[in-house]
Image (tube, rainbow, N blue to C red; front, top):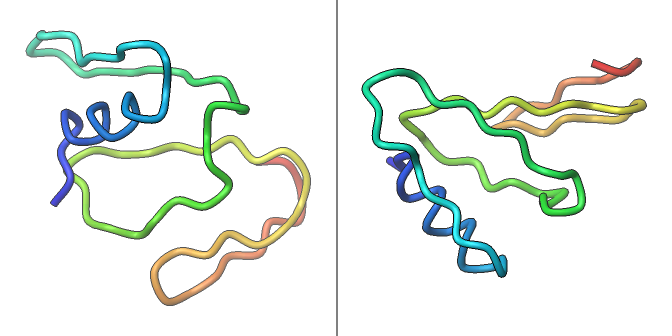
Length: 73
């Protein structure tokens, strides 16, 4: 299971900047520029939530199913 610390470690390997998780007992929220993100995200269990902003239409493939996106979401 990928933790939020694992995500930041993996994310910072392909970036020039050093990203780190704030050491708080509260929740954590971060926003990344779209050009810094991949179009493909591997499916795996995580102990955190990932939220994606969808501009336009298309298909969202998740695990063994797909979800049709017919408008921005």
